[in-house]
Length: 114
Image (cartoon, rainbow, N blue to C red):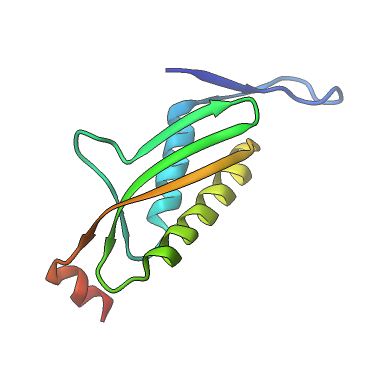
């Protein structure tokens, strides 16, 4: 697992180090804040992060609940992930790709919506 550091400016002392798992947890929390979406679970994890010089690239795989407008949900995920990661870590988010891998038609979800 990689360890990433934010180097403080000259007037600050010390350094802040972030483990990739922490950033992944922040992304997971951000996705859970979006209504009508469920992060993909199982063998393939729903979050993949790539740390590059120009920022963090995130691939997020989700299932959307029936009745929600997919482009709106995907855009909300992008906004929430970018905002939360940049606010909590001071890293720049370069790109958030959302992959909708399915739609949840279960009756429990439909009842919760109404």
